[in-house]
Length: 261
Image (cartoon, rainbow, N blue to C red):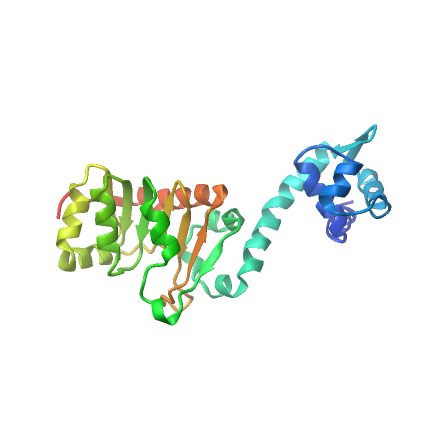
């Protein structure tokens, strides 16, 4: 039975697409034809197969998922979402050191949705991505972890603090020491801001660079050799914002708040 169900779902793009469509709600044949851009002649044999397998039901001229169908499609979606994220940027994900992401979050990578990999050209290699800075400056609530020192971070985050933006920042001990030595004024602004919570993670703990706001999620991972290659991931999907917030909270809980230098 399980083998037959697998064949039913995965060996036909039309059947798979119909199941995903019906997950959104019941449809009649005209709505199915319009949504999937198919003809009745092409679709009716596939509907017959899905009905025979007990995945969809028919009431008069309306089709809907059965309870088993809802169970199957509900479990299909995470896999399909994950495949979509990976397919869009195979080389990027294959070359990343994802060990810094907790297993339970990594297994939900499909929640990043329609994410884009930002790769600067040679003339802007050491700039922060425009997509990142423009959207960050428009945000009112920011959760951010910093795994490496960037010379533009201190001025950017201190500017946000002076503008009254609510921020929670987690960084590595090495980044904190660099800020103390090279950017004491900006660090003082962050520590003195009533709207900023500033934390340093455990000494040997690794973390990715993350920024999550009400607008977007931004993620930077080193490559498998521990090198920074200027490539970042950014997504505006609601599911990605939720995923990013949960990931940030994981590191926040393992960090210690800093009140003064």
